[in-house]
Length: 195
Image (cartoon, rainbow, N blue to C red):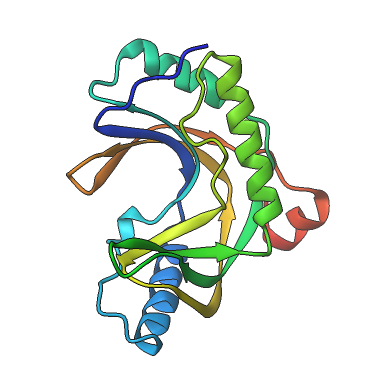
């Protein structure tokens, strides 16, 4: 099994919020940002996502690699779930910018199961992901300096689809290269949330 060399664009599997979830995330993050007197702006709302597994860096996305990545997406077995972002955390120094991330308690276990399924599917198609160990489930809000831990009003995302994303390095943009529905959740969840 070979690790794909690092180059400009990052390929990753992740989750994207709905428009309503994106708006709720930005509103809660901005209220926390004001309370904490942070000057750095929140990332563009369209860029909000949860990375499940960072796969590889590529300078050119080949048809063969895209075919392998989509084959991995086809193999992922995971159920839809809710994840509640409840705290903004940045661990770092004053010397360099660090990510301020939303982290979750409720739904984090299900997010970890999704990450493990994606990682296993990648290994099945012969790709060793660059994110090993797997990262804590999070959403990056902004970059800044110094430690910070602030509660936010909980924001719920319902994970219904896994997406394959090509992050366009230097362009602050990305392209969705594949999308897979997650399996329906358990019966009680289906009734409560209209699946």
